[in-house]
Image 1: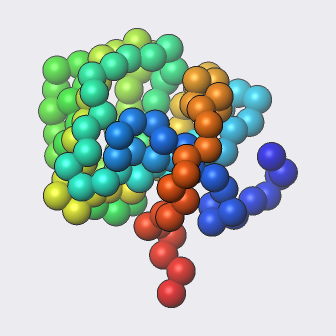
Image 2: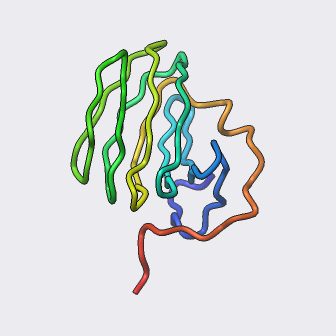
Length: 124
């Protein structure tokens, strides 16, 4: 990856059913713009990576270590390493930005998705 890039030029990767991401990765950090289709589910899981994120558009219902919250534009979250969490997008779906450390090597190895249409940023 070059120093600069445009999200529109990036391939999407299917993370789960109804969940795709465009990934920017450095040596130590992964950043992703994640798009969730309406009512899509991110099953309960945990990983070694710390995770920070915020909602850009739409809404997502997060449960982190047993604590639940509905998150909308501007709401943030912090998930420490190995903490179980799951989420469900709202009825209009969601676009979120997430940052992981260390890098999400598992995501980097995923094949590019056939679906390349994205909802953010919208180009009018």
